[in-house]
Length: 181
Ligand code: AMP
Image 1: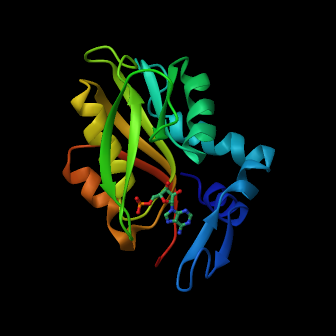
Image 2: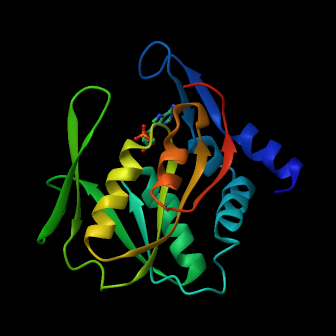
């Protein structure tokens, strides 16, 4: 990716130290989303390798993955499927539990959201330890979907999530990386 574009995108992300707790630097993408040029360029860059290929659906992880995933789906003329926290989807769901730093959480997808062998792209704003994206990958594969790639605006490589996802055979695409937590 063009070095100036990368610098521009990085500068469009706001970093908030010690949020939500001491020691964590929260990478706030709302400033990037609010910058028309940065938002558009982020989506264009993320979809670039997949434009022209067959992508049936984009699966976005609640909640920031909905915003970026929706834009990516539009750009690729693909459908959009929300991956939600448990209890939010009205129809029959499939569910997976995953570990958070403290305790566990569960995510769900409508059980009829994918046909067998549909080609999908998984989207979230950021990958850190990979716990969220790995659980989503397991859920999607369990449903018979083929994950063409997982796309994130931000990677925190020191936390190892992207490497773990690649070990599972998932192509990982991200635009900006930050050191540390
Ligand atoms: P993980 O499961 O550890 O890869 O964490 C990824 C999820 O947590 C994503 O949905 C992110 O939005 C959120 N997240 C984790 N760490 C940060 C951070 N430093 N800044 C902003 N969001 C984060």
